[in-house]
Length: 253
Image (cartoon, rainbow, N blue to C red; front, side):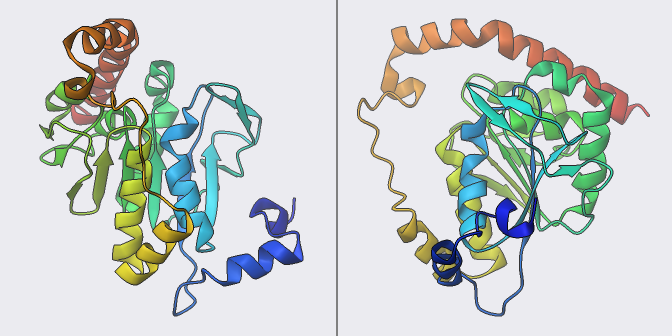
């Protein structure tokens, strides 16, 4: 696979379109996006879109170059292995993944390494627990989705309820889905300029207008919110156990 094919630039029209969004100064950002079996595409697509449109060098990172299944129905081919991942990423990005992946020492070792090397971290939804499992939330403010934000204290963080982006130094955490766009636009403004981020927001016509307005527990009401909490409880509890166990291994040596 050529670089042009990897970045969707194998046609003249897309190369010309991409040139419109090249940030001033010409420095190409390097963004690492973690993928694995069972990863949730909606939690990383914001980063892929926001940074991709400005011509960032995007690495889809997994242990091996092999097809992994995004859930639901989103087969994805990684482009970079743990071993070959650059050590000078402008950001490493992670969204929700299965708890089995958090229990994998190779995954936690990757985040331990990249958490110290990458200039910034974007963690969306339960992906915040992944970086917490690697000890990267200790002493920091962070948020996540409504059903797991309370778990963050067990990983050394100060939990901030709500799905708005919480920025603590080089750590950008958010709730699910649109949080990936929000965090990425804010980081793009910090890395390039607010003018660049504003233009990208316009290009994406990013202006969420949810049709049913049930996107938070408060808006959904107690009955629907409790149904959602109960349906996700087995998954979230497994995620909590795996992340606390990994955090224990990391912090206790």
